[in-house]
Image 1 (cartoon, rainbow, N blue to C red):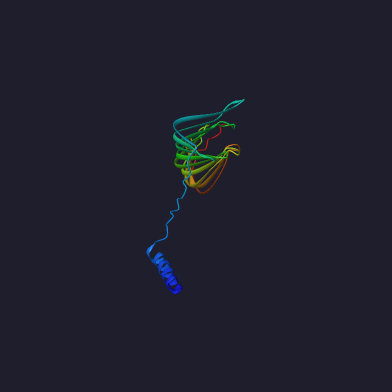
Image 2: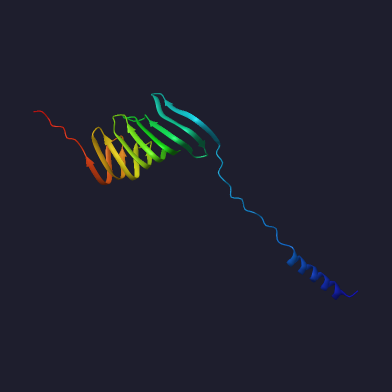
Amino acid sequence: MNINYFFIFFSLCLLMILFLFKPLEIKQHVSKEVPLFTISSFTMHELDSNGLVTLMNGSEAAKYANRYTVQKMQYTDNSKEFMANMKANSGIYKNDMVYLDGDIVYIREDGLTFETQKATYNKKTSIAAADGDFVLYRDSNRVVGEKLKYNNSLERVESKNVKAVYQLKESNK
């Protein structure tokens, strides 16, 4: 047998393999982050030597490596002079920061309240910030605006595009 026939046969086999066999398709699977644990209808207490520091509860929560995600979140910070309570449809607690989303109501112990749709709260500095429209009120005083920054420790409010309605008390002299 001639060696040329061998190479022709070998070349035909390689061409058949090239055109008849499809390469193996390897599907790439995008890995989804999996929570370490999930709980429903919970209350979390953070205590120190002075008593209750933080209270957080919700209808459902998941713990990931670096954060908690909570549905129907209610977060109370009792670590400063005035206790502050925040309620939201959902929230993320990460590194002493609370990120709130949906129907947020912030209520301070002395009656100061604001409502917004998206906010953050820094536990270390006691600063609550709302990026969108908000309504802030206390008693009959009312403020409407955008981009609220409220410092609970200094009792200082910063905002943009403000419209305020407030009541002045007359002093009796």
